[in-house]
Length: 180
Image (cartoon, rainbow, N blue to C red; front, side):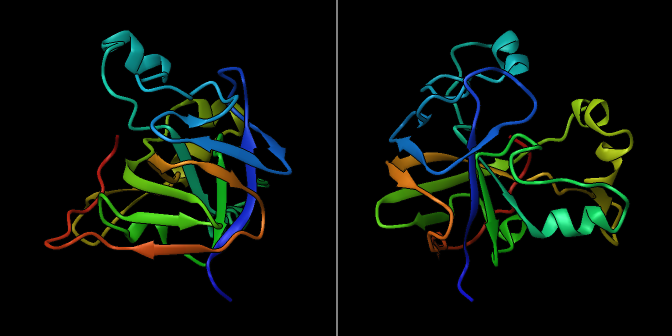
C-alpha cells in the first residue's frame, strides 16, 4: 500500500494534544489554518521566548503511526493527535528522510521537511516514561529522536485521512535532519 495520511489534527490552543478532524487546511508559508502554531514567525513557546522574530520552521508536525505500534509494545497507548502532531502517516519512514525533502500530500499540498521534533518533558506529564520511549541511541551512541518531523507549507490546500503521500528527495548530497 502506498504511503498515506492516517489522521489529521489541530488545536487552536497551545495544548499538548490536538483534536482529530475530518480534514485540515494548510496555508502556504503559514501552516495549518486554526492551529496555534500557524504563522510565518515561530509560535512554539520556548522558541518565542528565545527570539520571537525567527522563522517558523515548525508549521506542520508529522508523526509516523508505526511509532504508536512501537510504543504499544512498551506499554503506552497512543492514538493520532495525542502527541501534538497535525498529520499522522503510515508507510513512510519520516525519520530517515533528509532535510528539504518535499512531501506531496493529496492533490494540492506540498510540504518541505525542516527537521526533527525535539521531544520535551511534556511527554512525561502526558504519560510517565514516554519521553524516554521516544528517544534511542544508534550504534555510535548518537541520540535518535523518534517523535516526528517538522515542515513548512510550500503549497496549501486541504488534506484528509486516506490522502496519498509522495516523496521527492532533494538534490544530493543529503543532510540528515536535526532537531528544529
